[in-house]
Length: 452
Image (cartoon, rainbow, N blue to C red; front, side, top):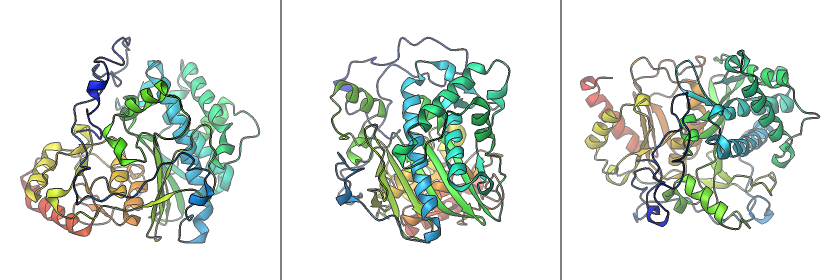
């Protein structure tokens, strides 16, 4: 079940949306039925045992200095990196919201990679702006980035129109960098400079030194479908994740809004006078290793500026340790994880709730915020997990009080290059040690009988 419900389906006409869309020769990533909501049940919000972080209305949350929270505790040497990273991810969220609002009107912006997975203008544009911002802030010689996208598709013959769209998107976004506490470029970037910024993210990682990991749009399929996705940026030093930032543009600040599909937010916003940020749509979550703290702030809306120190509020994992009351997350796509195996595990440990099937690293955000207690992923044989798909989420959950390991109970290893080498069977993230131990024991008991 996705992260939202059909509670309001009766309030909107059936077939509202995309039934008149023309077809495209590319794989039908954006195709879905005309009903406004996908079939689902909802996150448990009525249980008296469930605890959530307290989130208040944010009508002026970005600039209300009376509500400004602390920067974050921890090594002073990373305070500037954290500030720049949060600003960059905030700006990337702004870019993605603009692109997503127009994406389904222009299928030409959706491309297919060699593995048939989708990639969009937003993927390349976000990678370009974050690469440019980090290089501008810390010097290109001092910045090493491991990221998902390359420039092969953009450099192919006949890709001029696509490249032009990326360059225009990048420049439209960078000219507003000052709103996010960042430095505007002195002039418009040309195509070669945008391509250089994207291709600069060519580090192979490793066990020594400092480098960034970036997934510019984690959950591109969710992004295309108007669902959950994330911008994930992390800093790794000597093989350890020391800083993580997750931008979740469709993951609302207020837990009440988790019951509604993101498209409902957009339509209500269009039908209503937008005089405040009352919908609280979207958030940025971040943490620094060793601080014992994780923080969440709302997205910067178009009429606002990001004032730093920010107005973030602390978040923490749920206190639930009874499997009967716990909610667990898993990937939406069966190709990314074995739903049958996780269903068996859930039954064996006494998990009664149906799984929350969530695109992207929003699963990590859900656990860090206390909206769910367990995330399990068991990929098909031969699949290798990339470090950019986990780094930011791991440090955020850990600093929020949770536990993340492989299915053997060992810490994830980010020191072996682009992949999580040595990963044993799968990834397990839990709100607490008790739940984590129960899941690990269940995996050990049932693994030999699985087909993974």
